[in-house]
Length: 182
Length: 182
DNA sequence: GTCTATATACAGATAGAC
DNA sequence: GTCTATCTGTATATAGAC
Image (tube, rainbow over all chains, first blue to last red; front, side, top):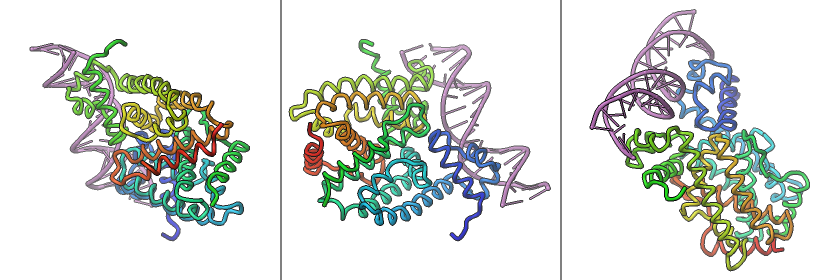
């Protein structure tokens, strides 16, 4: 828990990077070790099985998400704007963790699916007080899901995604707030 | 083009089913052949390589999507409601094709990513006349993406997804229409 | 058109040296 | 703690019989 070894973190970063850029299939132990700059044996000292490697990535996501929710609650212009703005992939550690774990989830990994649901529930609870009703809340959550989904496709793809940014994003946030304000 | 062999379609159905239920990794030639009730050799007569199998699935998606867009345009209560209602996964051939190709896209398959973008553009163009402006259009598209994203995670997962249905869905559609009507 | 048998490559994991 | 070497299973693909 307190100050994990550096090599372990480097392996985890490499694993996430391959998942994001090339997909679950390419994220092998061998490729992860190579990208992290360690040997297969070295990787296997830290993570005895592939399952252990995946579990560690999922745990990282949950830790980061819990920290993020606290930030959203304290956003200056309300939780909704902060939440939607953070739904745009900026390449932060949390963003990368979500996309990486999404890859595992799409591969049928049950723990990954469960973790993503828990994270989504965390956000939903943080945003609920700012939505007029449950329908409005669903609208906000779905727009956020949509933003993330387009990100997940865009990363590592040659074609740029249709994700709104800058003035476009601000206009979208304003529209969602107008439609859902409590 | 005109009336493809039955065995070919059966193989394609099996391939899509495994992609949806177990992910890209599990969707091997061997598993596909077994699920389709043919031998590996039999499968390889119809699809000489794995790439050919994937290309055929992508082609099926584009054909189905083009048919779907025509239906949306003729929806009785407007394109927006029809579009969002069709964004809920009902297990139709089109829904299955989208989720299956999404799995390929998440695996880094460039043609799959490009096809999904083309399909999204098709829908965007069909809905545009019914949106007040581009921001409203983005809201509609993102809600649809969000619905599909939750579906894609829910399929094959033990935990049921948070996808709205019935009265919940109708309330959501009404809210989106109120916020975006041209 | 569909099958069996097989070649070749690479996955995850183990053993044990340093 | 990190390495090399190796075992075992399984992936895609080929060859060729029926």
